[in-house]
Length: 138
Image (cartoon, rainbow, N blue to C red):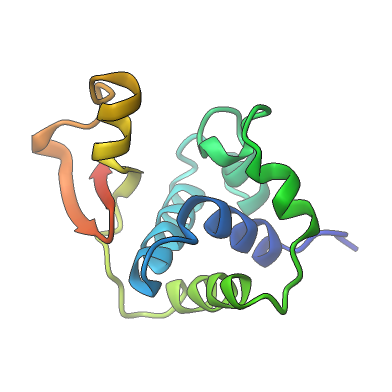
């Protein structure tokens, strides 16, 4: 028996990465998790490895304060319930993003903190903007 279900890892990741986004933004992050898992993109093909692989989802980095908050959040919390629903919705046939969407970022935040976008955030790889996140293919 697996102690922590795939849906729990996914919902926690969505909560940490997109809780301030509209519902569609949460679903889009969930779709990225599913795309990476399916493609074994920075993943061994499992949801836990996809979410927890070092430096892939910044919320799981050791210095991110959201990790401790996520450890004690209740599944009944309004924000968490929306993330759980977003994970479920992301598994349905109707999609927000193309199947090749594997990266996203908040361009304004990255520019403010780093002064430049990562190399993979190129205009020719841009797929969609949902909420504050811009989504890219590899």
